[in-house]
Amino acid sequence: MTRTSDARSNPELRKLLAAQVPADFADWLDFVAIGALLAFSWGADPFVFALLAVSMGLPYLFVGPFAGVLVDRMDAKDVMIWANIGRGIVTASFFFAPNWQLLMVLIATRSAVDTFFTPAKQAAIQALVAPEGRPRANGLSHAINQASKIVAPAIGGGLLIWVSPQGVFLLNAVVSFVAAGFVLRMAPIRTVAAQDGEVAPGMLASIREGLKEVVTKTTLRVSLWMMAASYFAVFFYDTLVAPLTRDLGFTQTDLGLSLAAVGAGGVVGAVTLSLLREFKYPFRWIALGSLVSGVTVASLGGAEMAAQKVGIAVFVSAFAIVGFFSAMTVVPFRAIVQNSVSEKSIGRVTALSEAANTMALLTAPFIGALVASVASIGAAFVCGGVIMVLVALRAAMLRNHS
Image 1: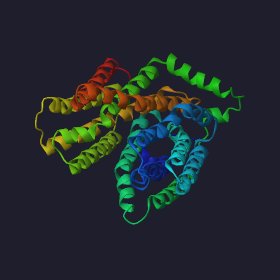
Image 2: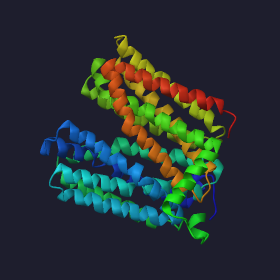
Image 3: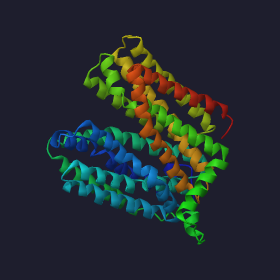
Image 4: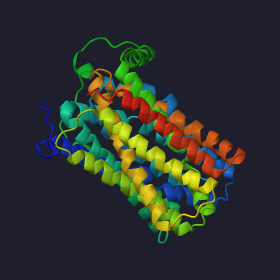
């Protein structure tokens, strides 16, 4: 398979990115519908919403590593097709859930199926794009992901005006099937591991091999730790954006604007990186992105702690800045992993990275909430910002690495 560094001259990459649009859209289209069903139809208590986050996240810890091994042994195209079909079937089954208990089981099942898609997508980008072009390809991929987080929930919420949450579930299932159809247009993407014909070791042994590769490669190990730390910093304060908005004297509408600003900033930042003619020294970009994001987040927290009044333009702009510079952190990390890992293990290493990020998702919000209860909401933002600055300092120490 011929690799190119320019998406414009790489038809298979264009097909992959086109398929990612409905696939990522399907991740968020029914998010509001699930919340509406739980809150308004079934009157679920707050514990159920905490369980929702667990149901969405735990499969990435327990199923993801095994999914990564299978990705390394199969055609990435086939994995993405079946992941989208499986997600569509499970999403359609949401229609028949009679209570929140069964819905949680189905959501966990969908997340388990979803664990196959991202490792397969990253393996496909690695197979299709030359190393120097991977930051640009990942920039475009990240832009699609961020845009879907803005547009899909908004459309899903709007659909609730005309249809029931169950109707949104069925529509979302169709979107997943459409994504599978887009992937069908691609040529086969067989990894080295899928082609070599060697007898594969057991699943646990393969996972250990992936861990060994992470441990023995310094750049890869440091990158994954910094990526997990970055996600931990974000989740430390992310669930507290609403109370911070309230405590600074803003409205629900202002909250919506700030969340949209984060997503829009992420899209612009990712596209900006994808347009660069040359992308050298990714750790410098990580250092810059983490530093600016960290200082901005900590400043918002400091304003709350000092009871300092902040204008709405400054408030929304701060979230746009965080989104923009966060993209400069996430995109280089993806490229570093692809350029540091062999094609035989890209799937399992990506899955291990997703598991580490999920661990941050499942722990950081609780620690952030504890800090907020002991000190203040702003203190949690300051702590998250400090973690980002520490990531920036560590990345700056690796500034000479390509």
